[in-house]
Amino acid sequence: MNPKSILDRTEACRALGISRQTLISWIQKGKLKVWKRVGHGTNAALLFERKTIEALAPSAQIDTVSS
Image 1: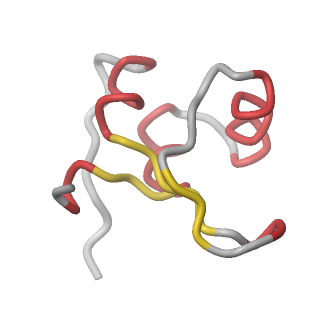
Image 2 (image 1 turned 90 degrees about the vertical axis):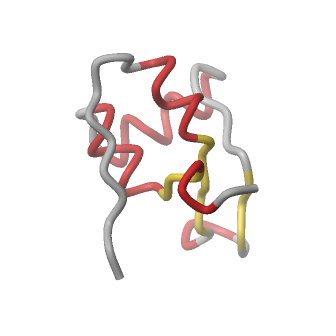
């Protein structure tokens, strides 16, 4: 999968205009699907498909964070 088609937790929150707590709540309620979880526990990296985030916020301008 193209790395540009994947968003991390921070990018997803920014694109959706929500907090990290709201993001976790949406995942638990089934409103948002995690594409991949890397690691274990609360510090696991959560990755999301860009198209999933865009479907929830179609007008969002999603810019990836440059390293």
